[in-house]
Length: 282
Image (tube, rainbow, N blue to C red; front, side, top):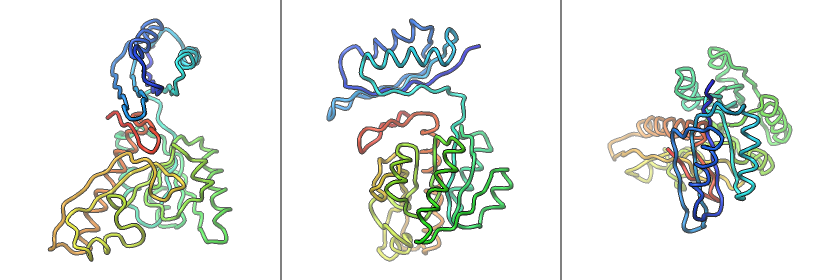
């Protein structure tokens, strides 16, 4: 039976890489269905994503062959079965628009995820989680219990073998240690077109400043607060006639859409880290 794979790779750019990759796949019975590449002239790095079908080798044997090939070219790489949903844990606080949007898209078959658990520092969405038959973990956070709560969160994430953690409006700052443990597999949604209006009540700040554009940014979580590699951004036009409630509603719609796109692209292995930036093969 044919299996569809996604191969991602990055390495120092040099002549013949595309030829080498396509030749390797041909040699092992791979039929390329989709391919994208990017040469970063500033850093000299090469990035590639290849989707291909292969029935000659079982997945484990193919992975060994890819590993040997990648080592010979000093490549960072990943090999994934396209139809295998990504195991995911969602974190949320008391604003549920992003959580609700992700759950609906997942249940509708629009996101290739396996949502294993929802973790929250409030109880607001335990019934929503139950309606989707997803385990809900209520872990209240105080300054005194923050370390213990993060340890329990990581325990749940590891127990569920989560490949992706989504902060769907989780309003707690993660410790440096937790950020390091989740490096490259945790996505946050920020309520602005970075770096404007950090902190509480962003739409009140935006309204007070009379902004004409509001936006949202989805990025990977790092120890530098809200400054991780950006995956996706979008903006919406607003004007003087709109109230704070209007801005909030528009902003939440934008946040939901931006986060959903970032999660979709990550789950389809379309996002490659490039230092403090990302390469996104849409």
